[in-house]
Length: 89
Image 1 (tube, rainbow, N blue to C red):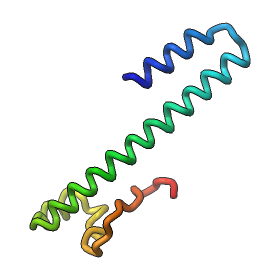
Image 2 (cartoon, rainbow, N blue to C red; image 1 turned 90 degrees about the horizontal axis):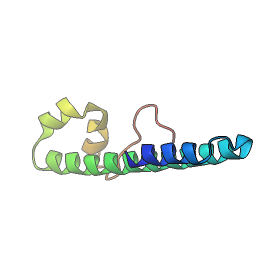
Image 3 (cartoon, rainbow, N blue to C red; image 1 turned 90 degrees about the vertical axis):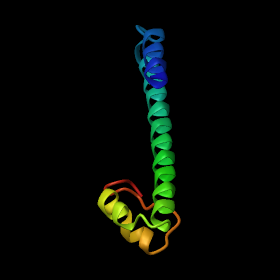
Image 4 (cartoon, one colour; image 1 turned 180 degrees about the vertical axis):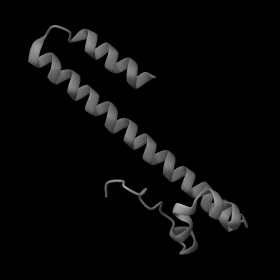
């Protein structure tokens, strides 16, 4: 919600300022989106590492059922989370 609040504040603060206000709002929106993407990527990497630990401790079937998109990378011994399907490289 913090990011939404920041955008709401930026929008209300720049209301009626024309092109400059819109540019400021778009800059803030882009920064918020970047921040959310970085957070998502960090969380995905944390999850991948947790799944990797579970796999190494014997949860092979669980990994195959719940994270089929990662099973090839995990079984190949990759330590870094592969990009999600459709994600930008």
